[in-house]
Length: 501
Image (cartoon, rainbow, N blue to C red; front, side):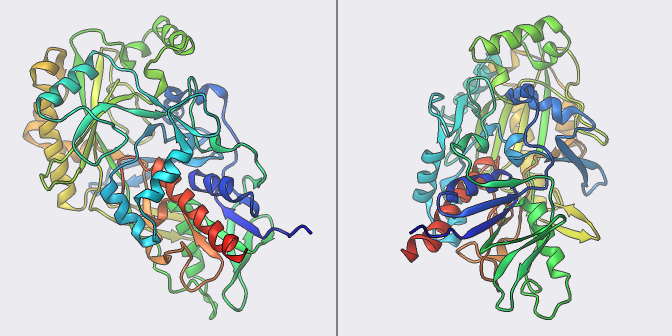
């Protein structure tokens, strides 16, 4: 006798939602509701480097852009995916697992540990490009700038290490979520798709019965009944649904007392731009020559490792700049320089001269903000750099980078450090005028769920996405969201299938 599978509605077909659906589809009848309009983009955007062409466009149907305000009034562009697969399709190429210390702190809320994390990690990721249905990892190409960068750091007693982890100070080549030629994302995990997907559909309400059991959802197109509802819409999507629910005046509203939308965070990204003394085949140089572009594309599709395998970043270092024994900063060599991401669009290259930059990310910022609902729209304010600690740490990072660039190994390749005088004399002004979003929103629902990811005061309603994080485990959240989603999915199966057998 065939037992009818219980029905699960997953709200959000992004980084978390796809991972969850792929894991639980064997045991449940799964439906994904995704607000994005497009299942995929043209094949050339699947080349890792070419995702920058989408971000560069002032308007794109595949990426939605909104402006967030910084504390000095500058508009900071923030990009959202309009594709199935979510941020994994536009902002997940640079890969890192992060810190064991931070992971243990994050996972203890969910009665999980680092061993559980590594179990999911080795199940979902692989550096063997021949293995299918895993997210592929490939090491970035290196040039003379990378070699000088790593040699200079080694002379500062920062050893060569695996940039996948940030448990201690180290430097080395960056890992990218990439196959041989094309991007690798959460969609790569799907071997057989048994779940249904409804695109271009917005969830308006989670439906409950009199016992506060989630019994389905109401969208702008239909009502879908289910046994379980999983919110995986990311910080903006999930928090918006919960905040709208909080505003309902029904006396039996189980979501009315939830604490939602508080303590959201985003990484700031800051660049130091450098003009090189000699040709280094930076993207600035290539951008001004059709011939060089063609050669780069031919090199890529001949199977040779090149800058096209990632998004431009090639080498990195994890640093403890405040000296407290914990890694707090990641710096990266990026094979182009840019003049900043200002209102109205993103200007990628500041010149066609041989150029590169050092990208700075403070891994665990203290600044927190809020997301609010104003009618049909959401207002997001991460309160970038509102805490003195975050500004001071970036000042330390700038000072470290200038010294690094002045080292014997690096300086022989450098013609000019752009804005060096301002960086040295007024680093705070430089920081506030030049930082931009890392596009890594987290938080907003951490206090609304219990150890099972179940929403407080409800039954059958769960949250698993970037909104459940209270802190960052790494300087990029792609793998963080993927792995937490898989840990949740296995827990969900165990509690709702295995425990009943």
